[in-house]
Length: 508
Image 1 (spheres, one colour):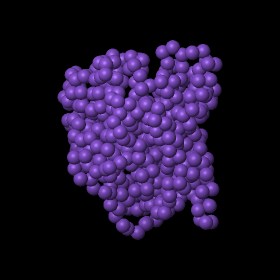
Image 2 (cartoon, rainbow, N blue to C red):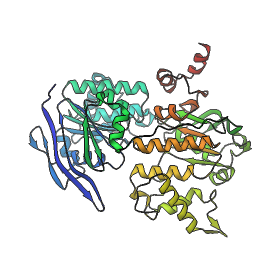
Image 3 (cartoon, rainbow, N blue to C red):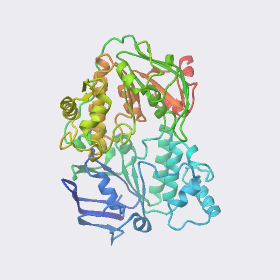
Image 4 (cartoon, rainbow, N blue to C red):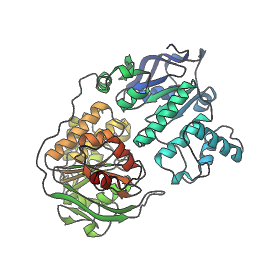
């Protein structure tokens, strides 16, 4: 079916000092078309959509929207011309209600009562029901995304840009979102869709443009390609499937017993009676929709949140009342989800960031002084082993792309030789090749005898690397089950709060 052209991008180039983000990029999107923009980290996807949305000005090239020259100087102008965007990281105020948040995103919001009625009507029409009076801090991640989408739909967009929209959703919420996007498509709204989840792309999208190092390298119809074929087009090489080293499980390396802690995070989720064990050589995968206690669990395991001594044990040693440095000495390392400010100090160099968590375990101090030569060697080892794209180890962490910083941080923790490794979102925002490499490293460490806990919202990732599987919901953890044989329906129900699922499964 030939669709009338909505947006044409022709010969767009954008360069920054030392890097060409986009080089002579051309593609078009038809009315009602769901068009994927694919590429590995640093391929130029984000820069491209920022130019379409008016956040960045291209150096050269042209864009046309419905046949007219399109040169938005700011997002407000893009929105006025019919282009809306839902960002990967929500821009919502938790202390305000839904209607107030929607009003903040509008140039000329109507009276609050009228706006609330419109929110109800539009959200019901598109199968995304929302209560305008609810506080955003009380909403699930999926409901928060609905707020962002409804805010866009109230502007009656002709083109809706979506950046990694399913990263915080359960399988059931993904289906609801896809129904909404297909409905919008049938009504003539075009959708430009960015995601690393290639099976979703195959299910949803009509066409795909693939970028590599700023250039268009291929276009395709996703349903006619396998996910692997598209991933290999993105990275320009064959992908290796992570392989598990088979070995007998050892003794329990991490034991958590009836762990309950109050969340220190505003609108956070407290942990309620969490219990599990992980043996040497085992990978425990913990799933859950964002905001159900994942950050709190990482804090409680790393030592940033303390409890009674026997609530957390490393190799039988009670460490529940010890801080992060003492737990690292005992053999437990942890990598939090937040790359900027928690896992890394953005303004410090990679060398300095390497020292921050590895100083204890890698022996990077001598007589109270930092061994900078040894720390530099460790940073260089990480960069080489994890293919971190950077001019060198003295570059500030914030200068790296999100995916490359993620690779550096994962390498920093996985290369410390710890008995217990806890990682929250190990492949957040990285491309297919880097994700496969990180997952292989996790499996390698388990094969060498480490006990690994992987907390992730990527179910495919958990099914690929984990031996046992549990779900966090409202701060409670389901009883871990063997990953083998689990279905997506069962996992989705567990993520939605069906805590009896594991019991029902065994009874059946």
